[in-house]
Picture 1 (cartoon, rainbow, N blue to C red):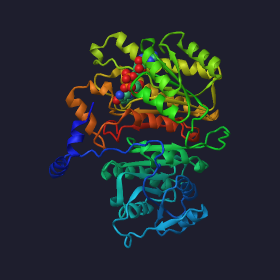
Picture 2 (cartoon, rainbow, N blue to C red):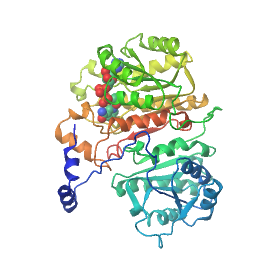
Picture 3 (cartoon, rainbow, N blue to C red):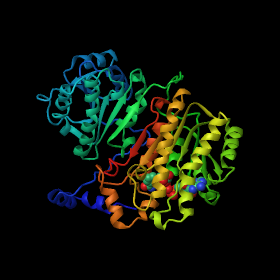
Picture 4 (tube, rainbow, N blue to C red):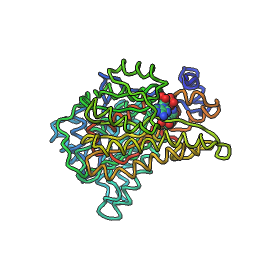
Length: 471
Ligand SMILES: NC(=O)c1ccc[n+]([C@@H]2O[C@H](COP(=O)([O-])OP(=O)(O)OC[C@H]3O[C@@H](n4cnc5c(N)ncnc54)[C@H](O)[C@@H]3O)[C@@H](O)[C@H]2O)c1
C-alpha cells in the first residue's frame, strides 16, 4: 500500500509545511540495483591512533572503489598508502562546506578509556552535517567482553549509546551502525562493510553487529562479490509471495539456485517464482510430520545437500490470550518455530548442510518487544531468537552460521490490512519515519547468507529503521 503521507511531505508545499510545524519528513530511501556503485560518494575514514582496523577498512574501501578522505591522522594515512589507495586530506577548518560525504567511518578500536571517547566527538562534531542524504555512519569497535581491561571495556560499551543516538539525530534517510570486530576477525569485515555502506542496508539502522572468527578452519578462497552465491543451493520457505518471494529473487540474483518451498495451495504462485528466477519448487506444508524427511530427501537426491536455509514461512493468528483458541496458539508455534527446529534437526542430522553453510531465520520486532494480541506470534518469534542463540556456538565449531533478521514495519499484505491508526504509527515510529520494503529484509538475508559473512554468527539483525519498539 502506498505511503501517501510520505508522498505528500515530499512535494514542495508538503516539505515547507512539514518543516514549519515539525512533522517527520521521510526521505525516499536509496535502494541498490545491479550495476550501481556500492558507495555513491566520498567516504571519510577516521579513527583513533592505535586502532586495529585501519588496514582492513582501507582494503575494503579500495576494493569497492570508494573515494577516500581522511583527517590528518598519521596511522590511517599510512594504512591507506600501504593499501596503494590514495586519500584526500580532510581538514574541518579548511575544507569547503560543499565537501560532503556518503559515509562516515570511524575506527574506534583504539579507544581505551572513557576520556578517549572525546576522539569520537572530535570526529563526528565537524562532519555529521556533511553527511549526504541516505548516508552511512559505521563505527568499528572491539566487543567489550574481549577488551584487555575494564576501562577499555567501559569505553567500547559506551559507543553503543553514541551510535544509537547518531542514528536518531542524523535524519535524511541516513543510518548508523556499530560493528564489533573480535581479535583475529579483522580480515572478515568486508562482506559486512559492503552491506552496511551500500543502499542494500537501506532500512537497517541502530544495530550492533558482532564479527568473530569461526571456531573451525574454513577455506573461503577467492570471494566473488558480484555473485557471492554462485554455485550455491538455497532453500527458502514461504517463497510464494511477500517477503519470501523477494528473498528467493535476491538469492537468485546473487547466483544461488533456489528451491522455493510453500504450501501446496500456493503451487501456481510458487511455479511462477521458480520460473522467474530459474529455480525449482517444493510444494509442501512444513508442519506436516513427514515434511523434514521429504525436504531432506529432495535436497539430497536433487542437489546433494544445501548451502543456505532461509526459514521465512510464518503466520499470524492474532487474539488476546484469553480469547485465543488452542488451535490458534498451536498453528503459530508450529509454523513459526517448531517446524524450523525439526527441519534443521533433520538436515544437520543427515549431514546435508555443507561446509560454510548458513541458516537464516526470520524473527520479528514482536519477538523482541512483545505485542498485545500476539502472545502466540511473539512467543514463536522470541523462540527463533533463542534458536539462533542456542545453535550459534556449535555451528561455529563446524564453520557454519545461524543468524536471524527481525523485521519491523514492512510494507506487505499483512501490514496493509492493519487498521489505519496502527499502520501510520508503525510507519512513523522509527528513525527513518517510514515502513521498510520486502527487499530490505531480503538484502539483509542475502548479506548473512553470503560465504564472506563467515564471521557473522549468532546475530539478530533488526530490519526496522531503528524502530522505537523494543529498543
Ligand atoms: N510483513 C511484516 O511486516 C513482517 C514483520 C515481521 C516479521 N515478518 C515475518 O516475515 C515472514 C514473511 O512474512 P510475509 O509478510 O511475507 O507473510 P506472507 O503471509 O505474505 O507470506 C508467508 C508465506 O509463508 C507461507 N506459509 C505459511 N505457512 C506455511 C507452511 N505451513 N508451510 C509452508 N509455507 C507456509 C505462506 O503460504 C506464504 O506464502 C514471516 O515469518 C513473518 O512472520 C513479517
